[in-house]
Image 1 (spheres, one colour):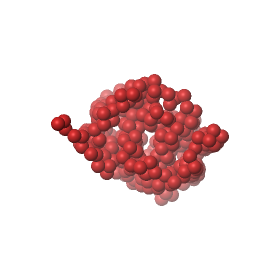
Image 2 (tube, rainbow, N blue to C red):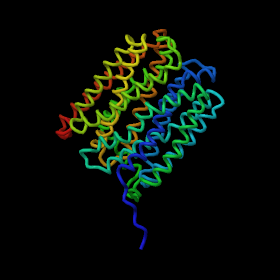
Image 3 (cartoon, one colour):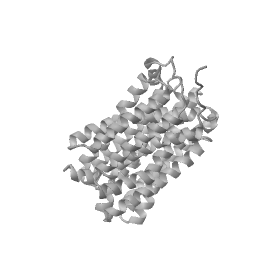
Image 4 (cartoon, helix red, strand yellow):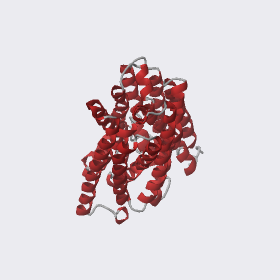
Amino acid sequence: MGAQPHKAHPALVLFALSVGAFAIGTTEFASMSLLPFFARDLHIDAPTAGHAISAYALGVVAGAPVIAAFAARLPRRTLLIGLMAMFAIGNALSALSPSYHWMLLFRFLSGVPHGAYFGVAALVAASLVPIEKRTLAIAKVMSGLTIATVLGVPVANWMGQILGWRSGFFVVSALAVLTMTLVAFYAPRDAGDPKASPMRELGALGKSQVWLTLLTGAIGFGGLFAVYTYVASTMIEVTHVSEAYVPLVLIAFGLGMTLGNLAIAWLADRALNRTVIGVLLWSAAALALFPFMAGNIWSLSLIVFLIGVGGGMGTPLQARLMDVAGDAQTLAAALHHSAFNIANAIGPWLGGLSIAAGYGLVSTGWIGCALSLGGLAIFVIAITLDRRLDLIPAAAE
């Protein structure tokens, strides 16, 4: 008799997937907190260094749909391991960047597997639990990313100050290798979907609700990145505190994001659309207050915490995509992270333009507020069309 496939234990699978999320969260957010250090080392100013953040985000945007469409037939366990291998290599190369232009290339390559990993991980997580608990299961995977903002990012920042910014990217590469090992041991051994094809996956792109949900994330989440990218620079140049305080404020952001991720997922399993609307309003208000609270370390820490809470918006939008994508689940799930990394590109870019135009570092708060309100307007259009077409289940209201 052939070997029987092992029965996956949901808690162990979610833990393995969350370690990968921790690695991704560490590199995504730590690169922002390390921005003043690699800018100094590579002899560029802060707005120019922000292009490295955008390069990573563009790698996510480009990689997610291509990988999801052409790898949809692969067993999800095999795909997750391969994606983490790509991620490990990209971050190791980032640590070895000899110049600004090489840094841009290696950050782009590091971002390529990001969206597909999160998309496939979310589908695996949702498949392990009843549908009424799927948002919380996805949130538990995403908790790896939010915990990274509490632990991984401050540690990487401290290491950047003591050992140099390159050490942070080496640590991320090691975490990716650990994820490969855990996924190999614990992820369910599925056979893949022989009916999957690029054309079937691309069918998601013909659905207006998919596009509107993606646009909500791409615009609405950009506000958080507009502020977060320049928090370290704001603390040094506006709040006038020592660089040693930067990791502590980053911990406050991470605590807010961790709390928001789980609380918002719990609410979304009960009223998905109202939860998304509430989070976008919360984010707009918190970002609008940022310019008024950046002058003092205590008020800055509080507002950064509140902005972090709004970072939990991604999980309910992921669940909504599962409802509206039909058979194209893999591509839609991956595109969700492309959308959020378009936000990761738009936010720092617009924030950088505002700073370069002479409006100051705190002007990123106004940029962020406008982006959150833009995301809210798009989502209101989406749910209005839902009601007209009678597409939305009552539980999502």
